[in-house]
Length: 302
Image (cartoon, rainbow, N blue to C red; front, top):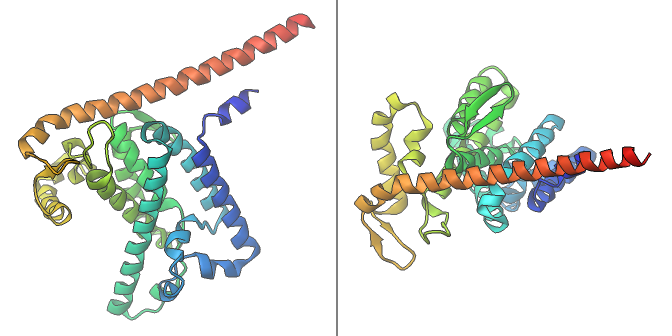
C-alpha cells in the first residue's frame, strides 16, 4: 500500500519516458548492432538523420539507464506540476534535439581540426544531457530550495554548476566518460538558452526569463561575473538581435521596466516551487496516514 502511494507521485509522462529508456536499453543489449542506427554516429548521421532524436534515449550501460530513469522520475516530479505535461514534453524534445545538433557539429569540427576518425565513428548517446537540462529548470523555479544530493544538501541554483564541474574533473581521470562530457555541458547550456529566451510564460505571455537570478553569470561564483557579463551580453545580442524584449503582441518592453520586474518574477517562481513541494508532501503524508489507519482498523477487527 505505502509503496503504491509512493509510485503514484510520478507523472505519466515521466513514467512513459522511463519505459522508453528501459526498452531501448534492452533492445541494444539484445541486438548490439541497433546502436549503429539509434546512437549518434556523425559519419552516418546522413542519411540516418533520425539519430539526432533517438540518440538521447539510448543508454548503453546498466548504470547509465538506472541513473537516467531515477533522475527523470525525480526531476520530472518536481517540474511537471509547474510547467505542465505539454511544456515538459516540448522541453525534452527541443533540448534533446539541440544537444544532438551541437554534438554533431562539434564532432565534425574536431575531425577537420585533428583528422582523427574516432570523432566521426564513435557512437554518442545518453539521456544525461536532458537530465542536466532538467536541473537547469530546477535552478530557474526553485533556486533557494535545498535538495539532497547524496549526503550533501545544496541549493537548487548551484546543482547544474556542480554537475558541470564534477563532469569536467572526472573526464580527466576516466577516459570512458569523456564522450558524456559534451552531452552534459550542451544539455546545461541549451536548456538555459531555451528557458532564458524562448519558453513562453503563461502568466505574462512573454517569452523567456530575463531575471538577473537566471543570467548566464549566475551559474558561476560572484567574483567571475564582472568578467562573464560582457561576454554573455554578446551572445544575448546574437540570440535576441536587440537589447529590448518584445511581448506577444509585438509591443516592446523597455529594459528599465524589465529590471524592475526581475525580482517579482523570481519571487513568483520560488512561491510556485514551494507550493508544489508542500502539496506533494501533504499528499504523501495523507496517504501514509490513510495506510496506517487502515492497518490499525484491520488489527482491531482481528
